[in-house]
Image 1 (cartoon, rainbow, N blue to C red):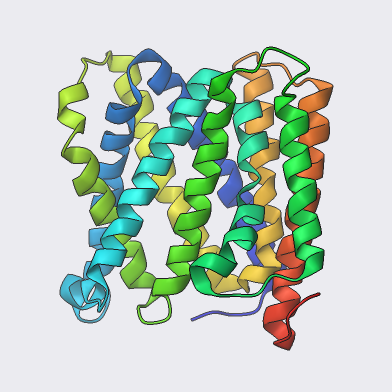
Image 2: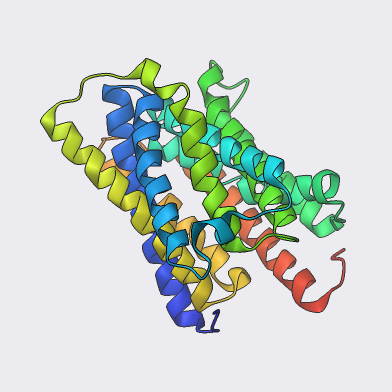
Length: 295
């Protein structure tokens, strides 16, 4: 049952973003040493076990939780998310945490831009202006024409696009299915999909890296558990702007652990993207609360 404790919800969201940032740092290390597919597959096995245990504890058990009138869409959502995670982890290995997260911060703006064609929602001119500022921020980070353009710089933008589509599909299936049902299919469909190809990428891991893999699995479950508790504590519109703390934490890990560099262009672009994203989230909250189309 959802309460309306904004302070607790915000604190939980900040804790969630810290755990996910740590998860990203471990993913960056393991995927650089081995490969992306195997790293994500093992993480998803643990995630699937978590959602099954969570579903089994609910009234009616796993069968009741899994019941859906839109199985194809739910399966596609799960497959899309696991593919997005693979793309994002690949971005970590190509660009590092800082630049990847700076570009990925574009996803709330992409959700707003795609909400029209995907969900049939109307987007007012103010949010279109915010979306435009966000894209300017991406161009500042990528700086096409001012340096030799690296194709890998588009990888986190692709991940943001995939995650935005996943978010919109989640909103679509929520019209008929519960959050628990969507969460179940996210874990199970993703785990099955990546297990179909993951064993072909299996590599032997050292004992120390198996320990890191265990921590990765625990942080994945802990992050999702904290996220559930966050949305139980407060409304999504209240806590969602604080999800950008993941960019702050990931940047800190990139600087302190991986010795990445934060150049002024990336910082400026990230600030512009985050500002536009927060504005878009707040406009969406106002639209939902007052049931009017922003313009």
